[in-house]
Length: 467
Image 1 (cartoon, rainbow, N blue to C red):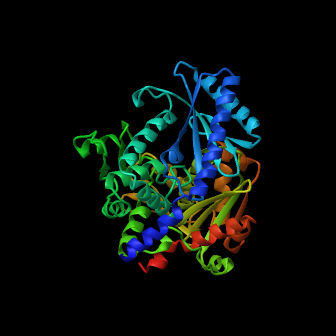
Image 2: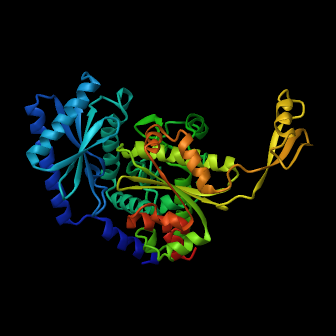
Image 3: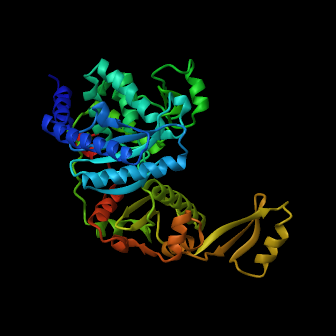
């Protein structure tokens, strides 16, 4: 047995649920299904209850199972009634089970029932005859389940390959299609394992993927890959086998694709367990790291929003504020966000926390009708040199209005639109930190671990594999 075969066998044993674990989860899911069916009968709702997702397909990972149970309504039911009835059925089921729940939102609001053994999402959707008739994105899910189940039942050993691929994606930090991650969904990883035939074959193919030039079309919906590239503009294209108008890989960002390709290449060169189960890196004292770097941060109250909405606004805020800092003259090396305990911290690493006292400011071209206004503005002062002509533009050297990064960031947060809810949050107050004080932006140990790993920015598998 080769080294890589021995490693994959060891990992597969860890990720495959034991018979006892299967029994515990299956029993819990059966109880939920019965409770939902009873609740639907009590509320006189014409609903079919079906288990979907990784549990139904038997591709879930040991110790990491979230179950999707769908409440399938007739397509004639108005969407508002579907949403109302779906929540009512799920709440009644939670009462019958005696469990707590929390409300979440995807295409429709839904409840997550907390059973202890596992969480179960009770998701309302329409039972449509084909993907061509869907009324919301979640309506495709039963067709995804049926497609993957059929392929895996025909070749049961592929379930292990899927589990290895999922654990690999988790280990290298690109698992999940949610906005926070912008990575590979479970369904996408299942399709890749099915298409390429094994975990290793998938990594060998991924090692050669090129952004915006890679098309994977499992059912051959497009005769020419160029047709798919014209329709889909994302970095990676994986045509949905059950809906040729959908790219399953559309949530995958260029960053996540790059990380997956880099990790695949590194694993093939030197496989090691850290790709699947990364060991937390020892961090030098954070005060020391921050003294050596130029980091500025702003802390806001995190509005009570669905996670995808919060992270969508956080990422827009990062882009807007980074652009604003660059307009002030700062060079932005990187940016990141952390959310937890009702707080949101936006982090920026810069080339320097303070800019030189003077800046070169370009005015209009010499042939512009705005030249007179620029000349008159600076001819009487406000600059230390100029106005003078450089090339075809008027130029001045002038004192900077704002030199410190914390002042610039505070001004930007106070004046920029950083997302509807985050802008409102900023209006109620925010705090700006620079240098070593960034460590105190949040008291959470999780924040400090995140901050340290972000400052190091070296994946654990890169250290362990020797790549």
